[in-house]
Length: 176
Image (cartoon, rainbow, N blue to C red; front, side):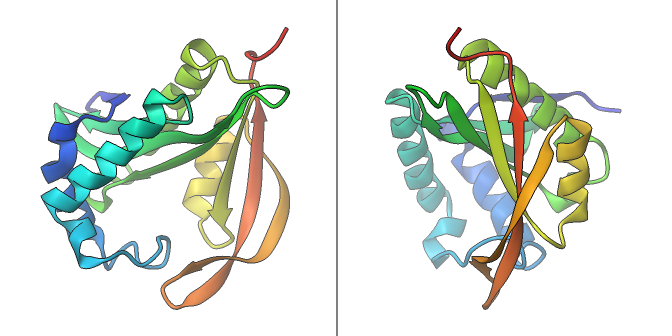
């Protein structure tokens, strides 16, 4: 079993991410919003990465990549970070279809939880999964997330609105 790491995204990750997104475009159409053609190019990913790092610089996000055997195989992020009385963020993640079923996603989520607690000092993480995404729901349950509701027609992807399950996990960080 190969090791799974996560790290902050870097501008040099653009070509690898463009390749993964291009390869999995059809496989993930059900789960992801439609994107313009340039999203699937190294230049398009460079623009996305620049925006993600700008959010990181302002404390609104921690955008990371999932790495195995030295290669980028996906992304994990903590976004929409709210401070003040909330101290929470939103967890998002995906791993290339070529690397699914090997435990990378679960290990990446576990590592992201450490970042949320130890580096970001958050009190709570939230996530959404489409109702049909049982694999992602299993990953969240494994890491102590609880579902707290369903939002009907919440997310538009692949030409249709999809229901989503809302998830939450209390962390040890935040205001004491």
